[in-house]
Image (cartoon, rainbow, N blue to C red; front, top):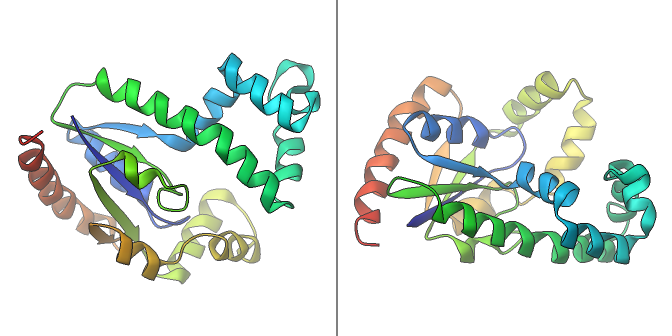
Length: 197
């Protein structure tokens, strides 16, 4: 089963691109959503997170997101420790999920595909890019948040030049209707390439 990684910064439209692939019958694994699920449900991951960050990480039996965010976003070493616990669990879950899917290829959606070294777990990579102002507008409209907060989040992510240099394919997402033919062409390419797997 061929695996395709799709990445892009906040507001770039990677989820829109993944939705278009899903509409074409391609199975999509949302690594962000699945990481949250695993952190909440996996006994092994819960134990590891609690051992590293304290019992308060699961206050009341549920993942204490504000507490954990306070620990990791102010301390790069703590964030690296959390990622070292979560990323292997996500990759193992993705591999098991991919084995259960139908079709010629599957998609791993990850905002931090390259930052987390997840590109080694896929066969092809796609970066979804968009102009900064458009990303700000989309994210503020979607999340009802302050533009400066979004700018800080964007600044913490890989920029489009890095993504386009590392990715096998790039999509520029300015007008959503323009994405459909591009996704259709990539689907054709990936389906053809997957026949070799």
